[in-house]
Amino acid sequence: MERNSELNISVVIPMYNAAKTIERALNSIKDQTLKCNYQIIVVNDGSKDNSQEIVEKYIADNPQLNITLINQLNGGVSKARNTGLKHASGNLIAFLDSDDAWKEEKIEEQVNVFETYQHVDFLGTGFAGFGINAEEGRLQRIFFKDLLFKNYFQPSTILMKREIVDKVGYFDENQKYAEEGNYFFRVSKDFKCFFLNQELIVFGDGKSGFGESGLSANLKEMEKGELKNLKFAYENKWIGFGLYFVTVCFSLLKYLRRIVIVKLR
Image (cartoon, rainbow, N blue to C red; front, side):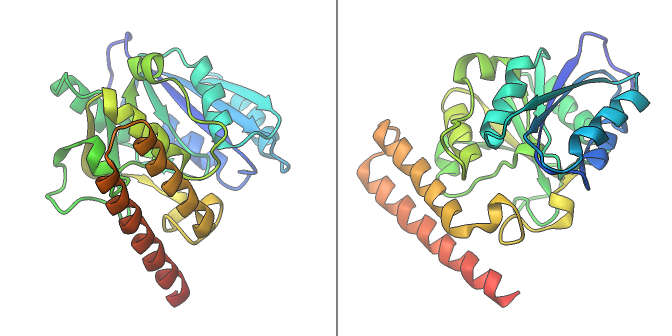
């Protein structure tokens, strides 16, 4: 589908040792049914494999695409995303992790929501194995307090308005685990966040969200990150002590459940 040439979407891709998956990620942008102005920003976060060379060849082979490759020393995914955000010029901003891929209708479905519901600022979607208990395609408002108990958003599903970066700022570069949860907390305090109950990405090459590989495989550190986010909310007086205590207990129970699931695989 063709769109107004004024629609500019910046796509931020943090990349680290993604030689096996980065081309698939880039192809999933090129194959989107919504044809508009895509600014693709690949931030190579000190990869030690040949990811950089693969992207350079992809750029040369696809001159019709607006792709920028930024190489930096390894500083973690938050720093890589922030580098991309600082170069983003689109009126809408999307994230795509280098080991994920979008389904071809992903951006078209999300832009349709933005155009139909002008009050939507931030929109995530489902992916294989994750959604809400509702009919497919349902649009549900996600409030800050909802995020205290469940993270509804995975970075590769997000499409958001530029104003969010202008007001909320950037990811916490000092937080290595559950860093996206901290960012989503801050976004949800000032902007209207929604979840579209539709599977629109292929997540981690078909892996589950935790216990498989990469950052999410380190369950203990992930739990520390989640607890840090809850403490952040409490210290900023976004929640009282009672709710803080309840959410910490709930988070620890989820952690124990994840350990059991991983051991039973």
